[in-house]
Amino acid sequence: MIEFILPEHLKDKIYEIRYLSDDVSKIVSYFPLTISEKDEIISILDLPFDGFFSIFSDSITDEQWNKTKQQIKKRFNDELFDIDEKHSL
Image 1 (cartoon, rainbow, N blue to C red):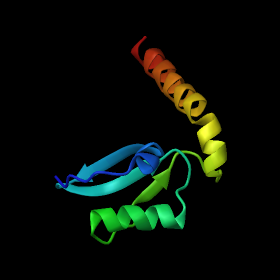
Image 2: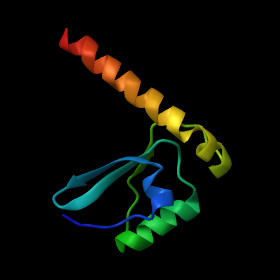
Image 3: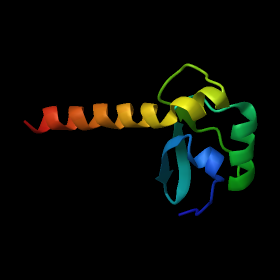
Image 4: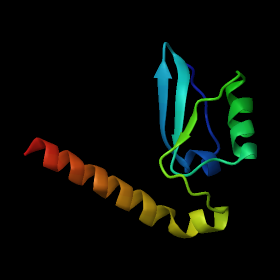
């Protein structure tokens, strides 16, 4: 599996990184990453990559993200937990 370290400002925006056959196959962010953020990740991977996806489709500024990220992450995780509870009943 490719081990790569993302800077904190990128890691914070990523919900999940999926692997297939030891390679990164999909990077899921909370909101769409900017072109420069994608380029930075591709540079770190040092491989051609186009498997970027996002949970929400709205684009937000870094300022908006920094103001609301804890609330967004908590709400998203709470909703996932709620879905899991309903499926286990």
